[in-house]
Amino acid sequence: MVHAGVVSHPVKWLQSGYHEIQDPPERYGVIDLRGLVELCGFAELADFQQAHRRWVEQALLGELAKRDDRWSEAIAVGSLAFVDKVKSELGVKAMHRDAIEIDGTYALREPSEFYAGNLTGKIEVLSTENTFFWDESVENAVT
Image 1 (cartoon, rainbow, N blue to C red):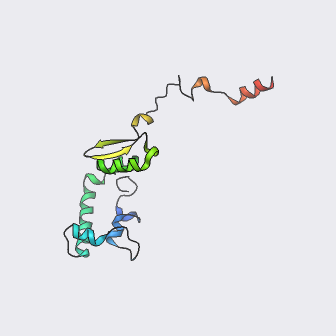
Image 2: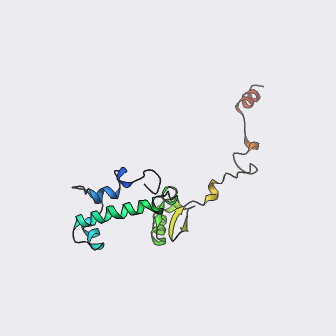
Image 3: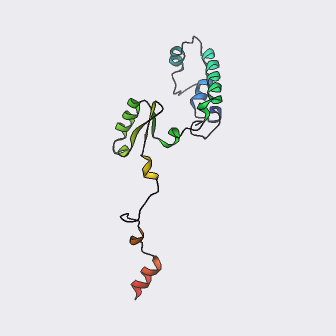
């Protein structure tokens, strides 16, 4: 949610992975902390938690603290394989969305021209030729 610009620090978003790592729930955890600790080369959870806090603080000082549109304007962000898998699982719901490469990662989103606001009014359903004002319709129906 930091990347989306909702909060300035992950500690402010209670449903974040930051909370699950720093204050693991007694039940129903989503993160395999034991596996994550081992994968990152730590023997103890407390050592990993300390390193994790340091990593987050360092990231917040740099470019990672800036809002990144990919996190708020895309359905999925990650590797091409991950984005393609999400698109495949969404089926027709992702039909007009493309995997767009941005700085070495991919985002599944609609092409930006869908939001360009360049409606011509010539062949559009909501063109001025297709507008039927209420007052005129009532007046024509009565006469």
